[in-house]
Every structure is written in C-alpha cells, then in structure tokens.
Length: 243
Image (cartoon, rainbow, N blue to C red; front, side, top):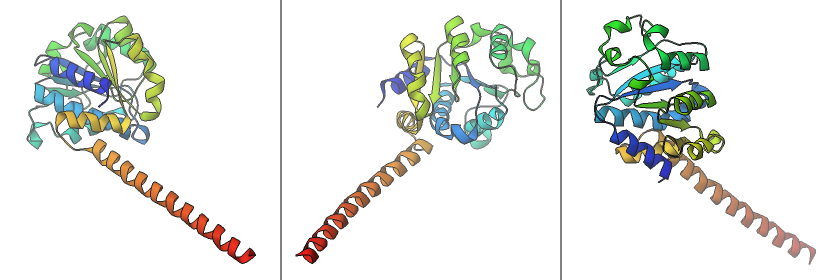
C-alpha cells in the first residue's frame, strides 16, 4: 500500500460531512482512463462520508470524462446512491481559460459561471449556496494533472489537493508532494486505483487492470523460459550434428 494513497484516503475520511470538494482539471479518455480508477473509488468514498462534489471541467473533453467518473461510481440516487443532483453534487460546463479560469473560480464562483452543464442557474442549486470562493473549498481533486492547478490552488490559496496521476506522469509530478508534504498527495495510475479501491472495499477498474497486468507478467515469464529451453535444445542439436 502506497503511503501517499493511504494519506489521500485518510484526509478525505477526516473531512466533516457537508464539506465541498472540487473535481477540477482537464480530462481526456485517451489518457485518463488510468487516472479514473482512483477517482471513481474516491467519489464513492466521498458519498459515503456525506461530502459534496462540484465538477469543474477545464478541458474540452473533461465534461464527459468527469461525468463518466461520477456515473461509474453509482452514487446518484437513481442508482440507489446517497447523492442528489444539485444538492450533493453538480457538474459545471466546460470553462476555457486554463489558469485564468482557476484563479477566477477561486476568487468568485458565481461571477465566473452562472449555469451548470444542463443550463440550470447555479443560483437555484442548493450546493452553490455554500460555494462562493476558495474559502468554501475543503479539498481539490484533479483527475488529470496540471502544474498551474497546484500552483494556484495549493501554492497561493493553501487548499489541500489530491491528484490522480497516470503512472507515466507520477514520477514527474510527485515532486509536489515534497514541496507541499501535508497538502498534496498523488495516487499512481492503475496501482493507486487498486489501492484506493481496497481501502474503500470495492473491486473496480484498478483491480481489473492490475489482475490483467499480473496475468500478462506470468505469461511473459513463461514464454521467456520456453524460449530459453528451445534455444538450449537447438544448441544441443547443433552440437550433436557437428560431432
């Protein structure tokens, strides 16, 4: 079990019911299916703890990706979950601007965006009665990493952050866990997803991927051994022919 994954889980577990979490960042299915394993497990965890979630899509595909994470977690009341849309969670529309959008969101949510992704005025959604600026945010989660997010969210505003990084990006971004040791935590690809799933008590995409990796690894070792045996057999046959 990764220490970073455990710390991320423990931090979410320590938040009081009603705390608002932002799922803010980009999101591309081609790259971030790996990141979604831990994000989905974390959303299940948040729902169980009575936390609230606002999805802030900062990339063109992020609306679909973040909605996929929420839907797959099966936390909405239509799936028998504890969350009700507009009360416990909401999805905003794609907001362009990158770092400028993040700064504006942290400064004044209602000045930046007026409707959710379905066109409902956020002034009519109960969750936004308690979300006005950075002071109302207990945690920022990022299913697709961005340097500028941690700089403005954690560096300037001091908001704790959990990043669900791809395995290839984990080593590059893990330096931020050293810069902000009590504020930033990262999970590591499918492995981090499987670890978070274990903590939550579910088996999802992370477990499926790691089981597949383990099975493939066994076959790789088997074929390496088989190839070496065949090579040794061929060498022996050649020696016998020479003699």
